[in-house]
Image (cartoon, rainbow, N blue to C red; front, side, top):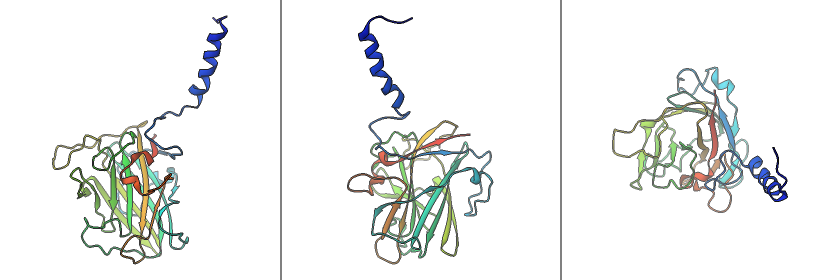
Length: 254
């Protein structure tokens, strides 16, 4: 039953706080203070149209974009942002709502300065492993342009179109944009320049890394603000395209 050895009891007592407070995904690859989001399951595929009138969206919670990574202070009229997430076995769906008084899409080459126009960015790590993903597919950083293309950096260190991974549509009413995307989720084994890649299937209990951001430009050559969903400690707050340790924790639930 018990032990009369006080040293053994002391060792057990000292271990208890560690067992209680250790988070489920505690490791050295993620920064403290990451957000945790539970995405509900949709029982059938959603129509990506920027309308988002499916009932499942009502079950998903909004999360804000309120971390100013780059640029000066901005007013609520200039920008407000929030997002929510749902999923099916085949796809991840994200809905963004943004108040943006001026939309800019002046760089006609989608592979050049694509981050300097008004852009939705979705950072996705299939297995929440964190770490470097600058020139590999340990994670993806999808830059969604206003013409609904998706760009990221390939393993050749050059911008590439990954629009075949996604579907993107947005609608604007006055100054409010409703931006809806679906994403095929790929593992770190993804290889560029081949047709052999297959998206992974999703199931309840799966944990992924997710971060969402918006590049806001009101008429400058370069983006004026970069606003995200996760706190970025230290210098170089726009390093999410390199460091997946900044991503929040996304759990798929039924």
